[in-house]
Every structure is written in structure tokens, then in C-alpha cells.
Image (cartoon, rainbow, N blue to C red):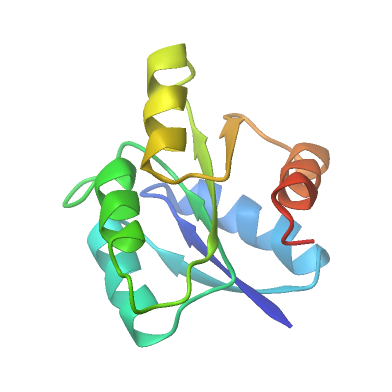
Length: 121
């Protein structure tokens, strides 16, 4: 079973994403900020990360840059899921190593489609 780490400071968003991802046969882990997510990745690298942008402690983009800098670790598929929907944010995320980008709010069809496009489904 593939594992997805859901990184969002909103407990509600994590809960909704968990339900959708479990229906897609993922084991799901959660983190409330980028620092928690990085610690989890250093312990056990997931197959995929669903990542929010705006979080306390360490933002999603800071987390992504740190994650992609781990040269000796396998790299998960990263799908940004955020309210930041302007072209500058999207380009910054892709340049930092995001595989896909989802605008909030999302539903199961959108999440499934983006995970298929990213090659994790």
C-alpha cells in the first residue's frame, strides 16, 4: 500500500484529504506544518505528499525546497493543494519541485485526477 503524507495546518482539510486518500487505497500520515512533515520524511519517506502553502513554523514551499535538497533520499511525488492560485505561486512551486498543483477547495475527483497525472496512482 502506498503512503501519502498530508501536510496542512487545518485539521478539517487533513481529515477530508485522509478520507479521500484512504478511499484511493493510500495509507495516510498527517503533519500540521512543514517542520513536522520534514521530520516525518526523514524517518519514513512517503510515496506522495499533499502539501499546503501557508502554514506556521515552516511553509509548504520551504518544506518542498528542503525535501528536494535531500539528495540521498528517495523523492516522493508532491502535489501542492493551496488557495494560492496566481501564476507566480504556481511557477514557484513547480520550479521548487512540485509535481502537480491543486486549488482549494478540492474534491475526490480532482485529487484522484492529479494523483493519476503525477503518476502515483
